[in-house]
Image (cartoon, rainbow, N blue to C red; front, side, top):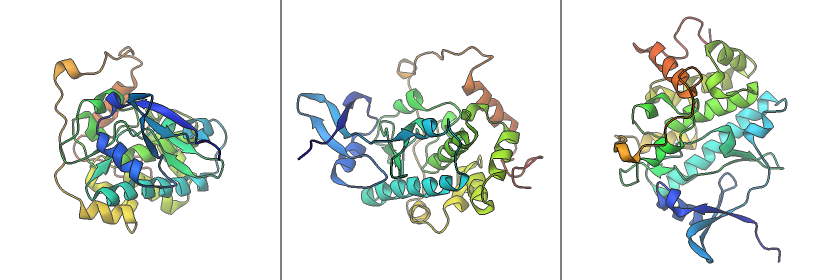
Length: 270
C-alpha cells in the first residue's frame, strides 16, 4: 500500500490546536486531514499533502468565471462542516488565494488553518495579527473584531483577485465592479454581499445554504482581539507609500458613515 504524502506544520504556530484535533477526527473533500503529531518530532503536526495548484497559481491563467461559484460553494461546505462538527462558531481568519488549492479534479480545498479558531474566547489571540493577509482581511479584523462572517469577505476578495489576476490590495471599487460584471448576476450579488463592511450584512451571500443556517444558529457575541505590545507582529516591511495595509485602511476610512460596497456612488451592482 502506497504511503500517504504529508507535510509538517509547527504546533507552536497554531492559534487553536482544537481545530487540528477536529480535523484529525473528521474527513472532508474540502479540507486537509490532520495526521496527528509527527512521531519523530512531537513539536510538529503532520498534514495530508493536497495535490494541485493554489488559487493564486490558477489565477495566473485565464479562469472560467463560472468555476468561481463552484469553488465558493465548496469552501462554504468546508467551513460549514467544521462549524457543524464542533457545534460552535468557527473562523479560518486567513483565507487568501494562497490558502485555497484547486485539485486535479477541480475541487477547492481550504488549507493552512494555523490561524483558525473556535470563537469561544479560549484561543490564543495574537496569531491573527501575525498571519492576516493585506487586502484579504475583512475591515473588522483591523479593529480587533472576530466573527465567522470575516471569512466571507476574505473568500470573495480571493476569488475576485484570482479572476482579475491581481492582488486584492490592488483592487479599487472600479476594478471590483468590472470583475463582478463578468460573473452571473446572482453570484455577483452574493460576492457583493460578502464585501459589505458590516459583517451582519453579509448574510444574503449564504442564505439558503447549510453554512448560512449554521451562522444563524451560532450567532452571538464574539471575542475581540487584545494583543500586548510584545506580542505584536514584526514591523511592516513596506514603506507608507506602498504598504497594502495602508491602502486597505484608506478604503475603510472612505466607507465611514455606514456606506458599503453596494450603496456608494459607482456601486458595483447598479
